[in-house]
Length: 289
Image (cartoon, one colour):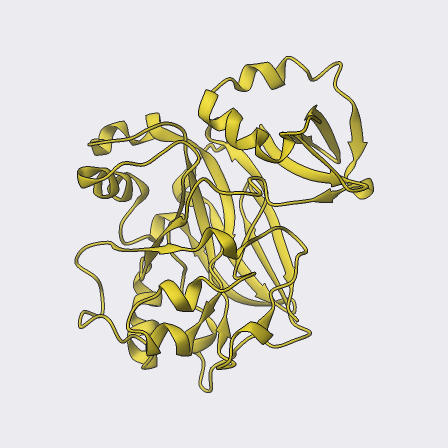
């Protein structure tokens, strides 16, 4: 299933996307939290049972929002989790926090839930006073239920599905503050979408391709198998001493090819367009203003 939240002439609806149609499963006053509620309840079959009778709309007639318009809490993110990107970040001069080129343990930080935007919403570079806005295409993992002390072999029991994330970053703010919360938490710096794909639709997770384009130029291209710390390791690490909740999002890290990897850096500017494609998850496009 592809779970989505949309705006239909200003009315928020939640449901599923099949082909070129949106199938409306919740049009009530709480539709903006219906996908999150579905994840928490695990009752996907209730929406599946509505397929034949639920109202439908062509995708061209609606506006797709972030699948979870209001996150339960801040997004959980992983830094320097692809070998080539870890090296390009270390070599860029913007990495003020680590002495290791390749991290020996997962680097975990959070991204403000207030940064969240959906497909086709604008990334506002004017908010960053340093003019150093960068893109980071990433695979997002959606947690299905409360998770504590999860062993690697059990990781799939706690995954609901997957979604595309753009971990937009102000590089100068990231460097200046010696940590990543401020540089990555700016308003509009958290594009997510266009929908959440349930894990049963993903046949070969390691071979999924992540691709980022800026103005139709391919900047990033990698497979999920290239992660330094794979998803089972991340879930085990995060739950060893803490708790994950249903609806939590883990952004698993970005591949080589970000703007600071170029000389000179290729920062985003007004008029640009960023598109992230991930196998089976569709495309997430955002204009830059």
